[in-house]
Image (tube, rainbow, N blue to C red; front, side):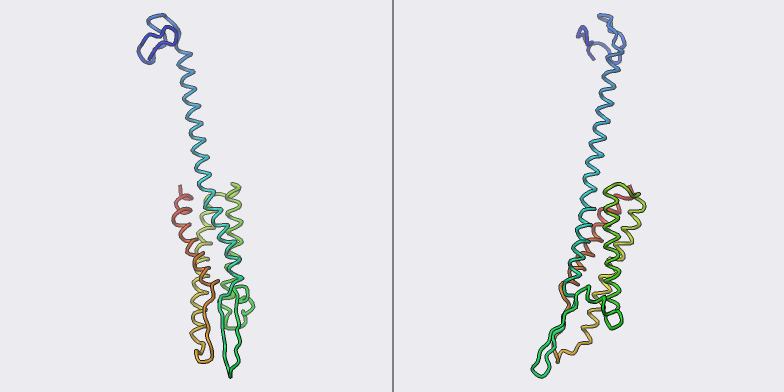
Length: 205
């Protein structure tokens, strides 16, 4: 190190300059405080970066749940019937299946209701997480249950609708799965990927 007064090179950690006799203790203390403040600033910057990185996944999940509400308004199943030269078409949206709880579509109707509840819970959880008003442990449990429920509700709906279409007679018309059902499978896949690649690792740290 060099003496701040005479500029001569002196042994490191010297308290008094052997050349000019200057007191170096105050100068060393100021340098140490400056380094400590620098470390604090760097840590704060790193915390800020980490917070900014964790905000994006929560926003993406909120956007996915909003898309889910839109997809429920799309066709889940379309049936086109042609009898004696007459044709008729009937479409069932995701929301429409909630009106079939007393009929053959009750399983999908129940899954749609479950999906709506899960969407609301996920939106509230992510909003509270962004505001810092919920513990990581609770976020982890809710997201784990939410993602599992998402996968179950969408897959069960798809299988159920497929089974309903399997009972449809091809000779009288055509029945097919609507885009809403496929899009929800995509949303469920997205939720699972987000949980295992982002949230599961982040919330366990």
